[in-house]
Image (cartoon, rainbow, N blue to C red; front, side, top):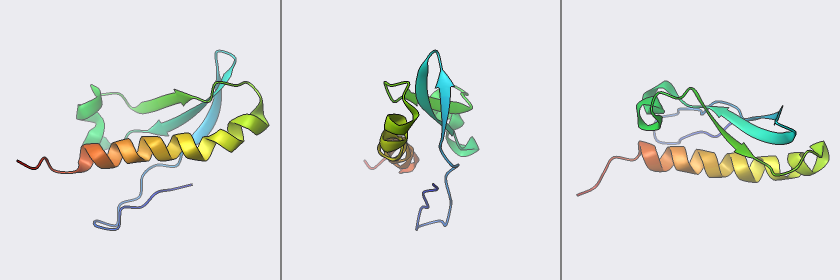
Length: 80
């Protein structure tokens, strides 16, 4: 699953599920050009709220899309 920006042709890193502290978590690497906006973090994580892999997979796309939308909002130039 990769999201592309049509303006520049840039593709965001692929999201993945990872078990963390007993819950399935969506993990996406933060692109290098946006890391300064996240305090230098290399990845962003959001929990699915479940340990069940099938339920987590069903929520995976929605959560990843929210993160990609956040990246898009951060990447847009500020309009004054």
